[in-house]
Image 1 (cartoon, rainbow, N blue to C red):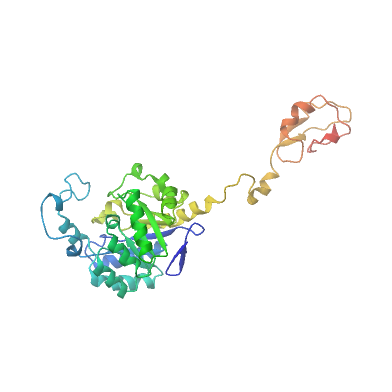
Image 2 (image 1 turned 90 degrees about the horizontal axis):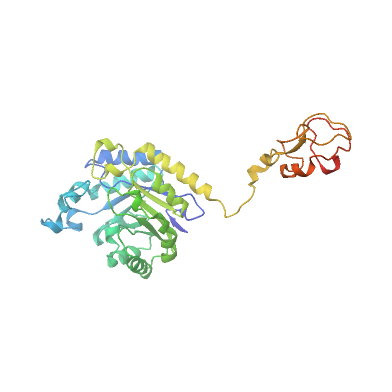
Length: 347
């Protein structure tokens, strides 16, 4: 169990739904604030930003190492610097976004990508930090974020078990006492077939942390499946409308979809229940209407039991249907009207 801004997050609580704005503001603060409004109206619990400048995450260079592969579905051939220039959230926007989110009941926090971002977010009293998948190998950054004493969420896209262990150890060594680890497929968009959600219990065992999912697949299916496998946090990118475009629009949820995720993830969590087999309390009334053997025609004492005067019908109260072969041919001990449950003392 961890706690972020007073909200408990763990297996005995409904999933904590994080709306990731990323670059879907399309360079407009007005649109960024509209995304905050939409996320709050949809019932999300948190709003997450990414805090970097192009110069803090890469350099203005060219060459194959500094370009996305030509085959990338969304950003093929684009220079890293230009992509981050287009996608980053200006630092001067953070405060109005945080203020709007808090006013609407959302928990605002961010992913810092270098020490200056941690320092900046501390001034905004960010209640938690998220380490992005590509930064899981930046152990000094993890230790620095952990040293703030705030809860830490680490995304594990692309990471090996050894890298995850090292990141968790760095967080613990840095002073983190409230840690969550997210399963993630760091491709954009991600294929549901590569989600490997059955690894969630393994991730929980490996890290000893609360687990969740940072999901870049289309739709809601993968996120809801993750809840069934123990996810306590769900992070999805959001936008006001995919048709408006933007760096992450193609794999982002629209407001109505986000609202459905909030509702259905809680339903999925509620449905987990306990590992027991047997009647539920709500089924007690239904038990009265199981089938059993009843007299269905007026009979007289001495008459034989036949398939015409005794049948398996609803409700319960008579002998079980499996007793039919054993009672056929026996004789009634007294008169019985239709609707009389067949009992052993009646034959």
